[in-house]
Image (cartoon, helix red, strand yellow):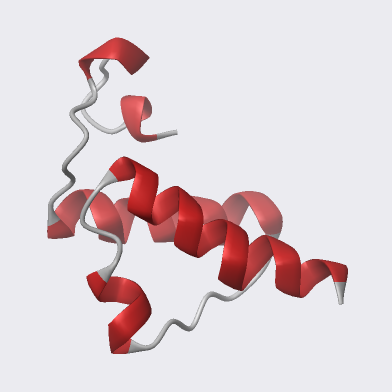
Length: 67
């Protein structure tokens, strides 16, 4: 999903993501899954990397949808 930001290939996406990429990613997830994402500061602080963002989204968004 982050590869679409800046029209990159997936292998061109670095592990670290900046605040603009993070805002864009959250917006894209909200749009794609039709869910409002409201994360606290601690969750947002963990989202400085692709793997951290994936973990937070999995824990806070997708597992919450299963409840």
